[in-house]
Length: 208
Image (cartoon, rainbow, N blue to C red; front, side, top):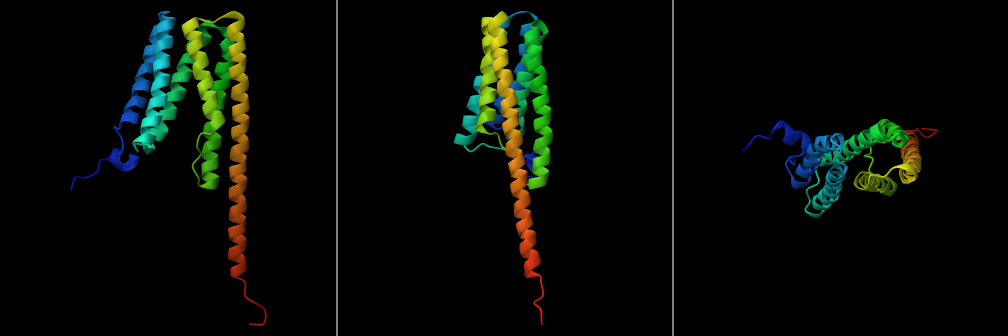
């Protein structure tokens, strides 16, 4: 019998699946986007970013449709998304100061989400998954970045689209904080009920 490798033990034997390879492909596209933008080939950078976004949609569908969901994929997919968006926002902010507040918010949100997500998992023992408003915010940001790159937006159009993404980011973070808070509160109530039942069943009736 073939001995399982370290990677197979850690990631459940599903490493080089089609969705995971597509996520890895998106990671490879990040330096391509950076190089194209630095060389002022904005349309090419936008097209590459768009390909990355389309690949993101496809790999999620393939994973669910053909039962290729893996622990590695659950970590790799969002990591590829955020790193690609971060790279694009950094590039754009160097040439357009209007985008700097959105870039700062983006990194702030990622840090807060990571810390609160870990805290929630530790407190509740449950995994935290993306909500619809998180997915909407990701799609909005992706579409906005593509529009900025392909149509070389500047001035008022750029300010407007940046403002919309900024507000969406703040609202999304707020909703996630509320959701995590409810998860922790619900878990605490369940623990309290279990403790109450255990204490009650362990009491010795009077007169015995």
